[in-house]
Amino acid sequence: MVEKPKKPKKPEEPEYPTALGASSLDSITLLGQNLADDVMGEVGFGELAFWLATQRRPTPGETRVFEAVLAALADHGFTPTAITTRLTYLSAPDSIQGALAAGLLGGGSRFLGVTEDCGRFLHEALSTREGSHPTDEAGWDELALAAVRSAREARRMIPGLGHHVHKQGDPRTPRLFQLAAEEGQFGPHLALLAAIGRVHPQVLGRTLPLNGAGVCGAALADLGLPLELLRAFALLARTAGLIGQLAEEMRNPVANDIFLSVDLNNRPVPPRPHDDGPRTAGAA
Image 1 (cartoon, rainbow, N blue to C red):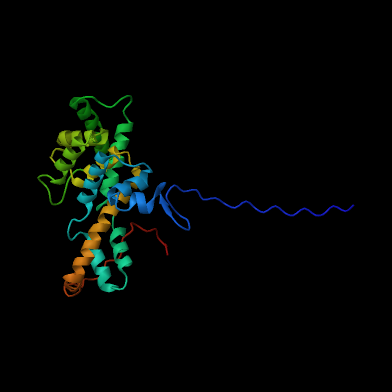
Image 2: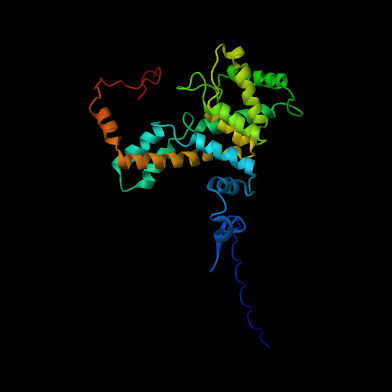
């Protein structure tokens, strides 16, 4: 008797697990919740952003501090990110997404990136200490001095120190410290940054303010948010600000004036070839 050939096994379907959004014929779920019934109208956007990033629902205190950080970083006027967004809209008014993206792409080490840089700097300094965190101000000051001296010796900037406008003190700084303390979210990153604010003149020879962007990074780190995402939260906040910049540009445009100011006031100068150092004889 001739055996019938066996049917080839179907390859197993790939699986792509996610705890985020999923849809069926009659419902949408998000983070295991029914989107329409349990999230819409029940969960604020800041709370939801925290929940999406951590996959745990924040406490009311965590939400208050997190949303305060978002408010602190939303808009700072005519910064490069705002100007870029407005100029891109001037050039391509049909591309709102392009204008927003252009502004967000400018979030780096000088603008917005300080939030992440400060969080990482503080986390690194905390990780150098063996045992538990300090329990008094003297202990925190000792740890802060070591961190500032190490950065100074390595010729590294100390993120969170200094501000080009608020030279006598950033008004966001004491408010964020206050809110974190009120909500029981004043953790080791904020404690270390506060100590750096006290002791850095001993090393740098001058007093600089603790800037709000750095305090935001410390606050986000104390909330247990991933260090790798701290800049993303700054960009989330700035997205709201850039939408505001676009809305204002549509009503009261200034981008063309900015463009013409540069275009009509440029000053031709002789070319200056790049000097990349001494070249050997016969080099092409």
